Image 1 (cartoon, rainbow, N blue to C red):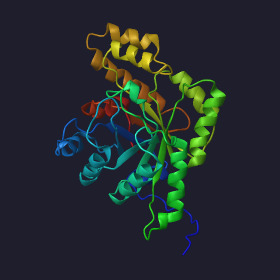
Image 2: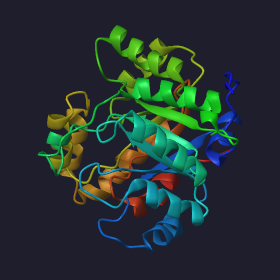
Image 3: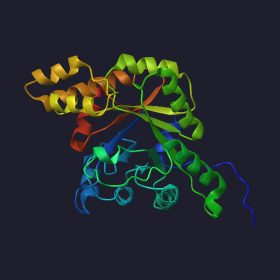
Image 4: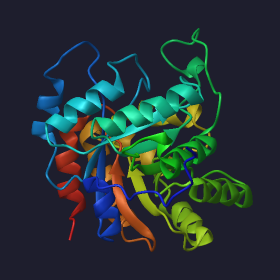
Length: 300
């Protein structure tokens, strides 16, 4: 029996419902444990404020950590709504689609399609990369999988997302790349960390109105040295020299970094078209509540 293409089911995840409700959305990144700590999810859940709509589980970003899919499943048991990254660096198209279906069966419907930093920049540079398909192709595959029901009695209902890079230039190519992700099925876009708000506002204006929720990402910096290292590794980081100088002069750089992060978040959410704020805690999950409070973020 042939299965005809049908209209994809809408995800019923709390995060997807918040996006459809057109209210300010707040997400926060977390990292799985370095070891096999089964209680890490419970500890994390206790530290995440109720104002957070969804928690993004990072996957082997800078260190080899516990499986993101397994940790996300544990977070579901703690009544958190996780966003699972599907990293094309590490998996081919078969594994990506299989993981997506398995995640949905575990109650993880929010999927973030990303390429991931190249393995040569990470803790295991000798590792081979998959890079079978890119994030746009992954979005297309998952959208088709959802629409066709994967020949299943219970078809998946994903909430699909991707990453956007506001500071990449030339602007024309940036916009083409971003719009491709939306056309491929992205329902939400998480930006790279924001520092230069004027440059971000320029990008938002050029992007115009698209059927996608854009979440402005902010990241607390621990020191001026960390900021300089980010500039070296990511040419489009766009961290202003004045900000680095402010960190260098601070008596407590980590505290100053939190204050800067909150300031950026408070201003970013006021830019036209921004639907929410994503806090890239970079391992500082205990700082999420302070950033939300200082930035005056609410979910009204």
